[in-house]
Image (cartoon, rainbow, N blue to C red; front, top):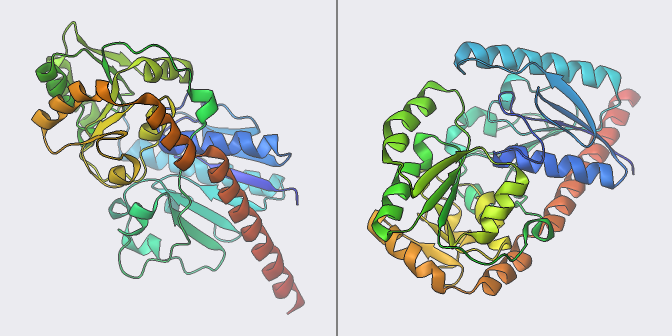
Length: 354
């Protein structure tokens, strides 16, 4: 069964192999997998995106990302989705943005990946009335936080391309943060912990032009930087891989309920242990004392950064291979695409016969 799948990105974030956000990376992996398997992949995303399949670009917002900019981008996405559905025989539409309800097609087989904490979505959007609209979590831990009355299919856990990530470079004496730069990611806490541990820290990440994000960097991150704690800006895949393979540990100081933590899986795929607060799904990704440390405050984080040098990188890699396979994730999505496409075909046939 050859499929035509329309993947729709969050309107304000570009997608591609060098994308920063987890949702954008998952979309890019699905796009490449669809093309490799001989399907037709169509991607709706803002300018500066790249796709292995057919890219339908919408204008990029270059100023402050306020509500006006968001509404403008959502309108452009609605128009692009409608144009794509009119041009190609779409089997499944797959939405990835937190604001998916703003450009949700009114009919047709549709899958929604809930990449962010479920509490961040309006409760009513988690109760779809249509039988051909399927929503899913990206981890069992996230699924358990669904509010009463939610209608979600079984979770489709994230995976990472372990062979593409792993280089097994020689370890160097620095800790690493890879994150969006915003208040809920707690990057300033990692800087404080690295200082107390007397360990250099490299920070890779994107500062999106939301007012709160820019202000957070100016007030909380920039003043804490020094010669040994440096902000590198956004990193492409090659730079990210190089740093993940060389770091003594990855630090995840997130204050939010992480739904899956793709970057933690990427670190383990590089044989690099993870030091993190036990928020959201992170306790299900990290095995304390074996593949990293779960900590409760900055002092514990500092101690764990030092202790991470004693953890075995082959153990981290082995856990990644066993638990975070990209092939497993792709297979689950392909199964969902086929089931939705078949559901849509059978029900459209039933309606036509009535």
